Structure formats: C-alpha cells, structure tokens
Length: 423
Ligand code: LLP
Image 1 (cartoon, rainbow, N blue to C red):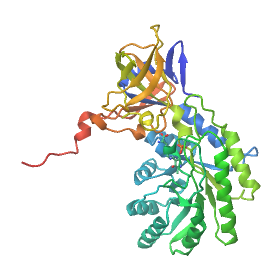
Image 2: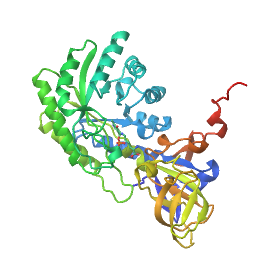
Image 3: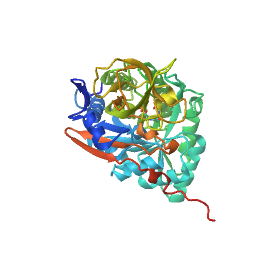
C-alpha cells in the first residue's frame, strides 16, 4: 500500500534512497514523498475513469487541500489532472504552476468577494456554490467585472458517509452545500440571474470513506435533481461527485478503484446521463500513502502507567492524531535488536493532545529514527507554528534523487514580520 516505500533487510527506503540517509542530510522532522507513489496512485485513478474501449468517462481534479506543495501539484498537472480548489491561496498555487484555468473548480463555504473576483478573472471552469447568499454575491461580483460566472450548486444530499464526524460533510446538520429540498428552487433562481451560467451540479459527502454505498445514495439523489432540472429546461453539463475515497492507514479496506468508478459511472449511464461530464475530486487517495514523516527519538521516558517515546515531530507537524484520533503506522527506520516495549509516541508540544501514536510496540533507543506512515495527505498542509516551531522541510524522492521541495523554516522566519511597539 505504500508503493514508493519499502523495507529491505530491516531498513526503510523511499524508492532507491534509505530514509536514514535523508534524515542525515536534511534533518528531522522531515516530510518525504515518493514521486513514483504519487504517479501510480494518479494513474490508477485516471485509468479507472476510462472504459475498456478507451473512452473517457470521468476526469480527475486533484483536491489540492490534501497536499498543495508546488512540486506535488505540478506532478499531477503533468499527468493531466485538473484541480479542486478551496481558497484564493490554492488558486494562486494552481496558477503559479501554469495550470489551465479551465481545469479548475473552486469550492468552499465562505468565498470572499476578492476570491470570487480572482477566480472569475482567471477564468475557472466552475465555481461550486454553497449557499443562496453566495450565489447572489457571485452575480454581483460578475456584474461589476462585466464577466459571466459559470456555476454549479453543491448539493447537501443528506447521506451518512459513515466516517469520522469531523470529516463527514453531506449530512443536513453539516455546514456544507445547499439543503437538498432547496436545490431546485436555487437553480431556478440562478437561471434568472443576469451574469450566472448554470453549468454543473456537485456534491461531496465526506472523507476517508471506505464503502461505495453512501456514494451511490448521494449519486441517486443528485441524479433525481438533474432529471427534474431537465424537465424544467435547466441544462446541466457536468456532474462533480467530490472526493473522499479512503486509504488503508491500518486495516481499512477501501474499495478497489476500478470497482468504485465503474459502480458510480455505470449508474450514471444506466440512468441515461452518460453524456454528462463527470468530475471526481480525490485528495487523500492520491497522496496519503505517498508520504511519510521522519522523526528522531529525543527521549524514552518509562512510567508507571505509560511509557513515553518523545520524538521531535509533534501535532504541529501532523495534527491528525490530535484532531481525529487518527491512526498512522509508526515504524523504526532501521530495525534494532533491542527489546520491544509499549509506548505512546508523543511530541514536545505543551498539550496532552500532542500525541502521534498510542500503545505501540516498538524496539527503539534514544536517537533512533521513526517513520510515521501514510502522512502524505493532510500532513504538512495542516502544520502550524504553535510553540514557535518552524515547519519541517519537504523532500520529493524520484528514483535515486532527492529534491528539497520546501526548505525547512528558520526560527527567524517565524517572527520576521512581527514588530514591537515604538518607545
Ligand atoms: N472535494 C471537496 C469539496 C472536499 O471538501 C474535499 C475534502 C475533497 C474533495 C477531497 O477529499 P479526500 O479525497 O481527500 O477525502 N483533514 C481531514 C480531511 C478533510 C477533508 C476536507 N475535504 C483529514 O485529515 O482526514
């Protein structure tokens, strides 16, 4: 499952480079990505969007929130991906690598007028609208600019994605999307606005989803709307089903990608909508298992109730355990013959929630390196500078070569733009 990362004679490698060598050269904590792993994950997804006769049935728009490093998104651009964006910042990243604006969809519940204007001027494929108020704001901004605004309404289909509540987005209690019973009305309203072009419909029900059933439920509900809209003369050109396909962090078994896309795309054609352009927005499933976080053991601290393995990475580098109690595999980079003990792996940050793994059996000594696995998605992008901790460097390995794709922050960087009051 970690295709670019392998263990050989007790030592872990990223492609052809020992992780220990990367740690020695670049220091820790350190994010390491494998270009091969990113590429394979993308190609598998993209291939699953093409039928046996070579006809494309869907298009991949990588959700760059999962990992928006320029080198990562540039790899995907070169493989032919479009992008799903959620902020002006992500739009700027996409434009910085020369992505075709027509390959960009812009989502998010709280787009500002400035972000909307920038997206319209850039000429994005579509703005995914999440509220009636936003629809009117887009029309206003487009009027001021004398531009047309291609839009899609994000439907909240009210289905349970059966994932962690913090990453479930398609229930009526969630802030996302337009309530199911208001969607038709909102499309009618949209079709009357002077600068709005209705082009699509979209939904996204959550993340780290490991079964296809909730997707089918959402799809059926969305297609019911498309059917109704057609009767009313409102034409939908594309259907965006969002992202959310889970990965194996430990013993999860997400659906096979081809089975997954076939199930959804067959349903689209069975219901007579095979002519629609289908967009998929995977994030985690393209990058999650293509990255690890390397960390050094600072101290071992045995205790009456718990043994702590204190490392130099923390919730500041990888927030997922603290935020969602998420599980990430943790392995010694170089196998040791020391005795295994059960440890909580924790960071130096002043929070009891600052842990990376709990009750893990590890054979480690002070100074050893650990690799925190499946850290390629929602890892670095969610990092913070809490406790004035500089963000780690990011490395991409391609075969025998390692490239610094983001330099380690210096402590000076962290307060360079601060100033004290004049005397
Ligand atoms: N499209 C939309 C509209 C989204 O909101 C998201 C993720 C995606 C696509 C991509 O979903 P993915 O394929 O990566 O599951 N920080 C959390 C995940 C938050 C996901 C937010 N939206 C985590 O670390 O698990």
